[in-house]
Length: 298
Length: 318
Image 1 (tube, rainbow over the protein chains, first blue to last red):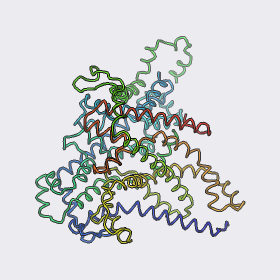
Image 2: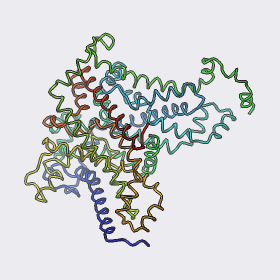
Image 3: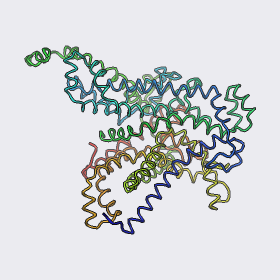
Image 4: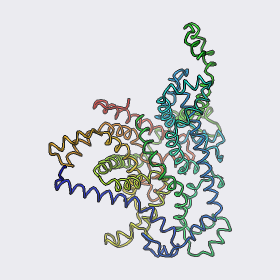
């Protein structure tokens, strides 16, 4: 047994205290937003809402969930996240598999071309003008096509594929599989953890992105929830926000006097956060590994 | 099997077929790579080529090919503009603050977590502290606005209860608080996630080292400084090089979302938000591209310099 000195004890207590403080500070904003979203807006304005709702209500959520615009935004986010993640992972995995083969002609050249893009980019304005030239403005495809290939994910995939035992692929070849068959029947089924990790990060990117639509999309029907939420948070004036809602929601709002801009934005924020909070506990063990795979390469 | 053995037996002369023929033979493999290369060419390389418009008076109507070349005009305009010194100061100060506080913070957290023996407590701290990384900046900005608001934001309430302030402070419209808010929010969002790599590095340390130190009578504090910290130094240095290469990325989402109030522009405008504002909002494409290019050149310089210094200390990226 190692005996603890007094200094050790002081250090341990200090560390536990600081970590508890950090955990509280990290958790409190979530909790406070949730509590405000569950409290009557007018009552919230009186102040003092911290840990528990004082006048519990689900009205805020009923307004948010009955607003056709917000629901449409939520739907766009879901579709974008699902389609964007599936296509990006698929395209990147195929690309990485091709690059993992030694016999590929021009392999070195392809890799150099890819790696250069990790250090240099054209920047905001030339990219913006390109999207415009390609007619991707106000198109759903602006969410999908430019992010089909991620060089970063490709390198992680490639490293993983190269680590797979060569014998597996050889036996697949003997059984008559081409490269495509080997990839989809042997390699991809063996890549569960990597796919899960990279899919998580890609999905989080798609779900959270608010900036790209804010510059490329002006058609309200294509705006994802995060961009809409930003607009709501920025329009502090109540009347502005009410006028942005569809008429049915406006009617409901006049009946429900207790709803305010603040309570409404909190409810919208919670709605926009729920998908991530919901999958988070299941994915934690994956992403910890994923971060390490990514950092080992660099 | 039969196929394999014929390939092996083929004499070298025949293997050195013409490039075209070899290419056709591995067409399936090339078809996996070429569409992706085309995408990279279009979405990464065309914009890189487009950077040349920094040396043009680009007009959408004339297009890239017909716009007149003007040399370094836009760069000179930027250097002489009244915003130059402000934008540069904000960029440098905010990046240095973020680097000075945001870089060591996850290391400190990892060191502290390593001292925790209670596994349940450790897991709670980790799970909660990783979470903000997965939130969008819009949500985080929403949290900050709500917590700091004058009408009963939690921070103002707490400060008033503690008798630190008498009247609620409108934090988000006072320039003197902006840098603190940006840096604190950044640390809040990324401290937990950043600590993962360092925790992994700590997990790889040989336990015998600690045993030996204990025999020699080293306190826990001393073990932390004499064993844990030096052992993770290589990882720290690699991440430091990456961070220095990113030094001029003072931030974009956070500053754009929290610096909404125009009153804050004097302290909030950094190179990236400036490029966005003059480029996208005011459509001064060539000028904004020149400003962006100026930043990219300095960043590459910084990365090269950092790597040079690191190489002398025995750790480098390339």
